[in-house]
Amino acid sequence: MTRSDLKEATYIPDKTFPINIFFINKFPLHWHNHMEWIFIKEGKVKVQIDDTFVHLEKGELAFVNPKQLHAAEGLTDHAEIAAIVFNDALLRNTGLDCTERLYLYPYFNNELKLQNFLRKEEVYTNELSRSISCLITEFEKSEVGYELLVKAELFRIFGLIFRYYHQLKEQSPSFSKKSYHLTGLLKFLREHYNQEISIEEAARMVNLSPNHFCKIFKKITGKTLIEYLHLLRINEAEKMLVDTDASITEIAGNVGFSSITYFGRVFKKIKNVPPSVIRKK
Image (cartoon, rainbow, N blue to C red; front, side, top):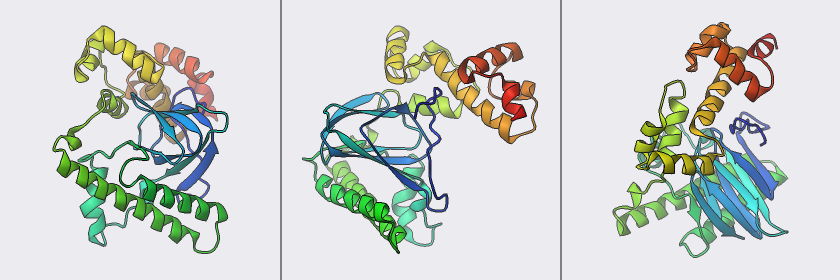
């Protein structure tokens, strides 16, 4: 979790059953392509998801969507976190029954946003915590049939989440429209990393002045806008160097650099080696 480009290559021991659980008391700011439950087992923890910072206590939960920035830090000596990282493949059933169409498609297609934080006083938090605890126990023991029971708990968890979501939506029509200041922008940058975007354009996307935007963006990501774009571009370039036969010049252009010299300089600054070394490996 210490990669300078913020994208984490999460360790999943079995790619055919894509889930892993990490027991920690803190982790630095990063993102990945998986979903994640952050479960507070003991103590108090400060959790960041995109531009939102929340203090959570034992039994409380945070849900991280794919590609959301997130971090956590224990606020007490005995703080303990269970970070349950899993891929959406565990929830999909290739449309063989109505559950994916009714509940998961709207979520996977960004038609609804699920709540990031669940506190003790909220309706389903205790039930969710019990299911999370059962899931952790089954995963740790890994006895015969544990995969089925882990999936069963995941479906129970999401069933409760969707029920809770629809109840809140009925109580508050504006609930589904709630958005975080930078979430949409961060998603846009990850999907359009090879395009030029000015500070003014980015600031308009989140309804902030350019000066205020720069302060907020640096606070949330730890990087300036151009540094963040460079990290995204170099990360993609590294994958292209490994996975394709495209020339270094072609790759530089594909990820958004008009100058091969500038690309090489930025690549070496971030990866500590020139792109030619990655290509040789």
